[in-house]
Image (cartoon, rainbow, N blue to C red; front, top):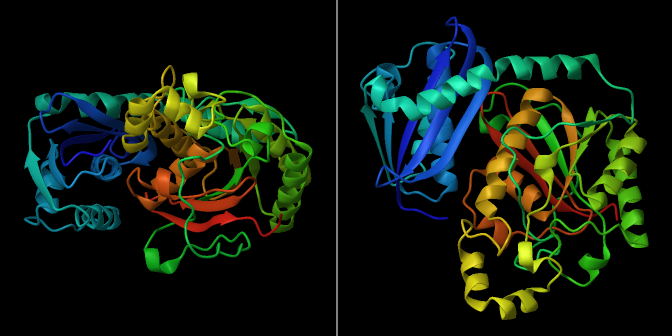
Length: 402
């Protein structure tokens, strides 16, 4: 869904100041009635002002993902509003990088306004921020479990917070291949690219698409169906596993629950001798009635709906889900992984749409990337997400190891 003008309301809070903190942000349509996006996250121990800036950044990022050009920001934080409006200086060291990140996002829109509102008028974002702070105990418990470690090969189901059904065809029938050669693979490294200005050590996601299935060969929509890997698909999984083992310094493998991804992930986890986790939020798009059809067959069955679906990510497949729904649950997975594996390298085995969505989130671009980016079977992409909210993409569609 692409919109021109939106309203962002954001808030953040800290129980202790500093203390357990979280933020919430909601993006409304210009009518201030229809909710287009919600964001919330527990951020650990921080101050109110840091959490408020994180809420603002999340709201601006969501607006950019929606394709908005004009943004009206409404917050009950006088400090953030006055600083972003340029009337007050940002002096505290912990807020300077956050203010700079917010200003960089503002520069990407045609117009952004900032308005102070009473707390009573910011109840939606305040509720989301409190829900995020309530999640703090759960996040802490999971982090302790991760720190304690699991035996290699353990499978732990960790559903993404707020996970919803959905995602795009494994056969990628609507994607347009990018011109040019793929970027050469790089060794896993802890160093952040200095030119981005991102702070801290990133959580690096090595995004691996599963190997070939029979539906892949026939280029059919393959969403929630569960076809196994072909002989070639198993070979692709083994070659990818060998490549990842050579990289090393990988803490865990996480995977979609579908068998084609699980089989690919199991090969990687065995080669790396690291835990394997199943994340329900990484499942492929639910294509509903189009499952198993070719692109042409789906277009013939529902000509107008298929055309509309290709141009609007808010429209679901018949009996299935929309790409906007996929983005919402994949964004939750991204937040969970950054919280669970701070500063570590993680292999994420999934499908076309979730991988494209993670790249979309890292690049901070709109939904057109879903239709313009090609991903081969068993290909590798690398995206990094930093503790200060920054992100970068290091690699896209590498298949040199195949």
